[in-house]
Length: 247
Image 1 (spheres, rainbow, N blue to C red):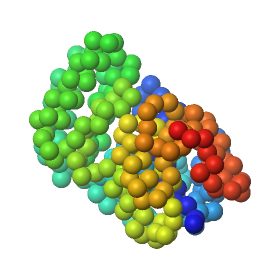
Image 2: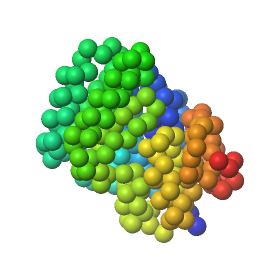
Image 3: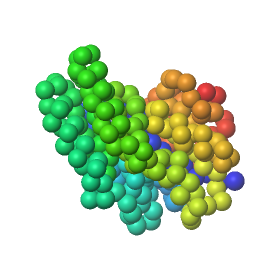
C-alpha cells in the first residue's frame, strides 16, 4: 500500500530554536519535500501547531497541504478552512490577560495565533518560567471545556478542544489523494502523542523524533535524521517506515 506522509514542523523538520521566528530551514529541504510530494502523488502534508501562514513563510515558495494550529485550520489542494480569530471571543479575552500579566516576566513570549495562543518560557529564569506556566494553566482553566491546554517543551498552548492533529490527519485520510493509503506521521513532542495513537489505530506508522516515552512504534534521533530520510526518499529509495529503528 502506498503511504501518505504527515510531518510536524518544529523539532521534526527543523531544529528547535530559542524563539519561534528563529528557526532555520536547511538548504535542500524545500526541494526534497516537493520532490517527495510528487513521488507520493500529492499525499504529503505538514501538521503543525503554527498557523499555516507561518509554515508557508518558512517553506516558500511551496504551498504544501497543511493543518495549522493543531488542526484548527486545514488546507488541501489550495482550499483553506477554519482558524478565524473572531470565532473565539472568550479566547481573545484570555490572550489579552496573558499579555498583561506576563509583561513583568523577562524572556516569556506570548505567541498569539488568532484561534489559539502559546506561552513560551524556554529562555526565562526558573522563577519566571514557573510563573508563565501557572498563567497559561489559569487561562485554560478559565476557558473551561471548550478549550484544552497542551504542554510541550517549555511551552503551554491553549487550543480549541475539538482540534487535534489526530482529527486533522483523519480528515486528510478521508480525501484524495490520501484516501486508501497508509498514514505515516512524524512528530517530536507531547502534543503529537494523540496523533501517534490514532495513526497506529488506523493501521499507519507513528515515528517519534528524539527522546522520551512515546506511543509511536518507530523513532529517529533528531531533525537531521528526518531531513536525511526525506532526502533519501526523495532520491528514490524505498519508502519503508517499518524498517526504521523501533521506539
